[in-house]
Length: 220
Image (cartoon, rainbow, N blue to C red; front, side):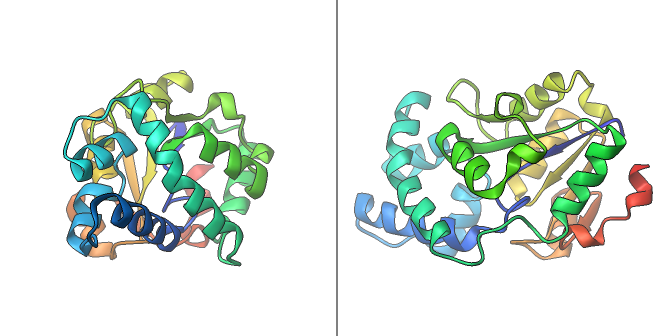
């Protein structure tokens, strides 16, 4: 593989608890009912805000409108993150990113998060040590969300690589499906939310629980 594309939420940070709580608080206020676990898996995990809001609000939401509405939920999410000691990069990830940077391996982020959240992550997680925000693919409302392949194709183009030469790190079924549809050369599942067997069943080629499980020799 010549390059790496990381999903972010659930892949680089294990923040399902914060997102679940934020979506529950926000959507309960919007639709006056609780969200089931099955709905979380099918309609929230790995999906763009536009798809999530269109489903739960039962009307078509444009990309720009979704960003505006989602910000209400993201304010809740960011507050929960800052209040928790569990808000940090996944175990072993800083060491892996340092290794890739020192080896000159191209890598970037392709995330369903909007720009304001990415700015928050850069500010509070030290991402500028490895990434430049302008070289990250985030949800700007101009392309369909996962499971559509667009986000990974855009990320590969940003790296000036064919997607077939890229490894994608993902934690969600819709993200794995998007990577497969894009034609990613390898998909590594992160078992932050689902068990290993489930990730393999969705199409992951390998599965790890954290980045200490990475064999650095595979990337030499």
